[in-house]
Length: 153
Image (cartoon, rainbow, N blue to C red):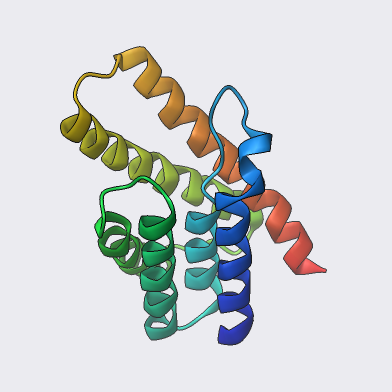
């Protein structure tokens, strides 16, 4: 995939994340389409371009969501570097391994984001934290499966 297509995909997924995705919540959680765009960028672009997409996606997420300003803009390029390093060492050519890897990344991203949120606003029940973290990560991974099918065509 070309860089321009990934940028367009990132903008579309960011727009969907901040607009109509609220109508598709499952148990109060929604997938992280912006993280999916970053993951796809790592899969299909060189490292420098993927870092640019990661930074752009992080800025989108920080500006349009209730995250701590600058948090995603700093975290997404780190995910790009870590995923790119892992892909060099381990082959993830099939969609099952890609989905599993995104699930792990989304889980770690949600745990880090949740801990920052808990630190900034106060107490959150451990059960609610686990539910949100696990369900959002699984939902994100399932949406990646759908997007990979659409991209393959």
